[in-house]
Length: 216
Image 1 (cartoon, one colour):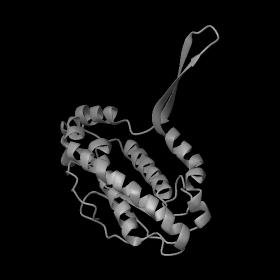
Image 2 (cartoon, helix red, strand yellow):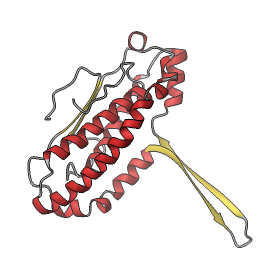
Image 3 (spheres, one colour):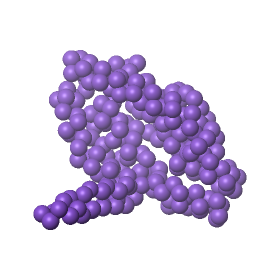
Image 4 (spheres, helix red, strand yellow):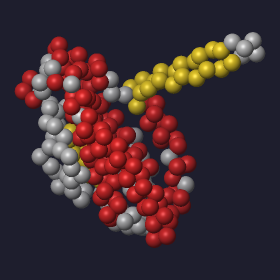
């Protein structure tokens, strides 16, 4: 990987593709990514709801619930009342997070390797397992989502900028086969910033406030 590990308990590094990328799969990326995006949506959790009207003009609502995801509220209660972070729960959250970031990396054109559901590939994520009694304040998880509000605002603007960078990179890759290094590092930095905020406010693996930085 290109970046050196940081002292923060959560880190992300993405290997820069120092080789020509596949122009065909890059051109059709939104279509080639559909199957893995569907899988990510299913395991990532969520609820889908739709309404259908019958011939009698009555409406019927259907709801489909997805399993998995990061069940933050339940985890807050476990930390608050039992002062523990079950290892199996941590392992699931980390594995899911790694998978989702592999999908995002692929969609962002930063690799032409199709996302694996279990192999690390070009994306390396390190998340330290917390010693809850020593490292986590049992009541702080109730407020972390609010304390991270400044990050949400900044990340909203950074995400728009990252999207623009991906669109620019799409054109460059089609002509040259290369992802401009400056654009690559910026998009990776935004992803890294977002991961640290996610780890702090929703994965609840650290009480260390995320740095306002794109750097490793």
